[in-house]
Length: 96
Image 1: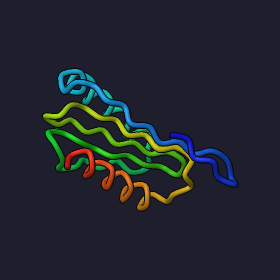
Image 2: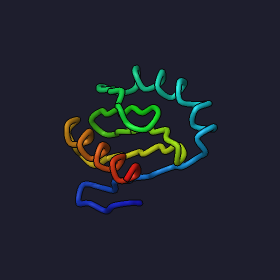
Image 3: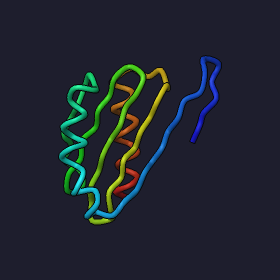
Image 4: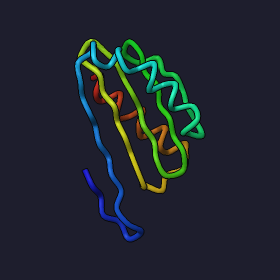
């Protein structure tokens, strides 16, 4: 989804895959998040989950019995706390 704003275009994407595929790539994704983001938090959601944020981009990865999900937000001009709140809310909806 692209969102037009006065300052430019922001994007939100949700990528899905099987639980097996998500488990195969989770450790690598989580390891890569540490040097790329200012904040990385392991979550108690689903089987495994984390969220990561910096000034212009954020992502959350969730593995559950329903499958694996990667949520990416870019260029929303949010602070880290707002990215975190937004990603947590999206993950909660996915798990509901």
